[in-house]
Amino acid sequence: MADDRFHVYDTTLRDGAQQEGLNLTVADKLTVARHLDGLGVGFIEGGWPGANPKDTEFFRRARTELDLKHAQLAAFGATRRAGVKAADDPLVAALRESGAPVVTLVAKSHDRHVELALRTTLTENLAMIRDTVSHLRAEGQRVFLDAEHFFDGYKSNPAYALEVIRTAAEAGADVVALCDTNGGMLPDELAEVVLAAAATSARVGIHCHDDTGCAVANTLAAVKAGATHVQGCANGYGERSGNANLFTVVANLQLKRGFDLVPREALADMTRVAHAITEVTNVTPNSHQPYVGVSAFAHKAGLHASAIKVDPNLYQHIDPSEVGNDMRMLVSDMAGRASVELKGRELGYTLTPQDSRELVDRVKELEAKGYTFEAADASFELLLRDTVGGGRRRHFEVESWRVIVERRPGGDVVSEATVKLHAKGERIVATGEGNGPVNALDKAVRVALEQLYPELARLELTDFKVRILEGTHGTHAITRVLITSSDDSGEWSTVGVDENIIEASWQALDQAVTYGLLRAGRDGD
Image: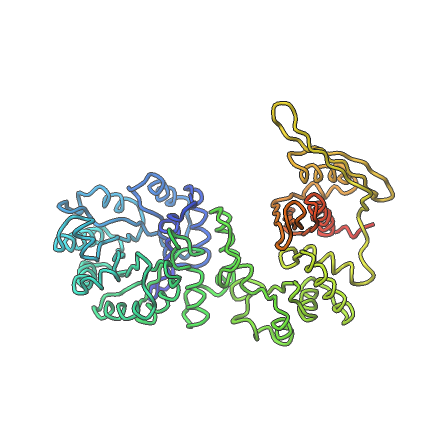
């Protein structure tokens, strides 16, 4: 298990799951828990057993289905109700019976919340904390306490907020996590309050929300002020603006402050873990997320590229491989020769100065017309292949294509496409029917080519984006189409631009198929 001197505590499965649009099944929660354990976190908060059937089921299944190597499971719940003994409270019983070695209790530390939300007295609230903590400790469970609304409570009544900490610690709570529940604190004022809390001699932790955009900064400030327990969520999930991003917190503490929190090999797997969790949660990854986002080490400006060509550390705060990420060079109209040379090297090509000049000029010419290559790496690689070494061999040549859109009786709208191609010395005419023009063209191309190139059966169009470019008007506007495709081993994006949306789509589709064949090892005929 993780070193107990400093806790990394994940609350994705409970607090993170409160994010709008995020809905995890029990199986999803078990999968996320395995990913987090692989990262090496010390504690995984599984949910609130007894409060909802899903969380109760999670803890039941976790006993037999989770084989945790690093983490311990924590069950979340509240202190007993006012006027009821902890031993007799059914929700406390659910925590006791969850099988979790750790229980995290939420308790009010804001005097106004005690009186207005709990509708009890300040004295009774302290008794609720004392009774529940001591009861669960006597039953053999380790207890952490989340002091809810602690910072707002400290502003309102500092003596009472600190008494909550002392009461919990004296009753046997190992840690009292100070919660910035409303997410309104700033780092300097938060650090002052953490110092005051740490002076009680209790072990304090920190739990921050990101409503001011300071959750990670607040967490780091709390650690500097004496907190030895940090809470957060994978990818910054959580309601409203989210919670402190646990990946960013861990990377900052380990790489910038020298804390030994997770195994080095696990830290180097962080980017994969972050993206694997997005697949489970079905939440679109934030490409600009620190450390693990696909754009976290992406460079676009030509000035940056020139410096990176000399020394990558000149424009990168760490080696991306330390968190399992990669440096990426983006090619755009801002690119200079260095950007193109580095991107070519990244793709496995050595460019001559003449190649670089020609490619830069071509990129800038096309981007002036509306193309974008930073979002379409596959299109750039095809452009690069056309520039280097006398051009690339073609898999097929297009003679013509045609699309008919028909509204049939009953209201159904169907598209039919016909393509005429030349491939491997043959002239091929094929048709395809789809729910839209691009779908029909895609099907027609497959009918035409799959017998010659069976690899196309594995190709799938996964995304289709259309943008009307600025500076043009009405139905005469220039249209840009981005198509994302995938096969068994990854995905790629291609771009097309034209006044006609179908022609723009065809350009992107043509390149998508071509690049898919290149990935499959087909160099053209």
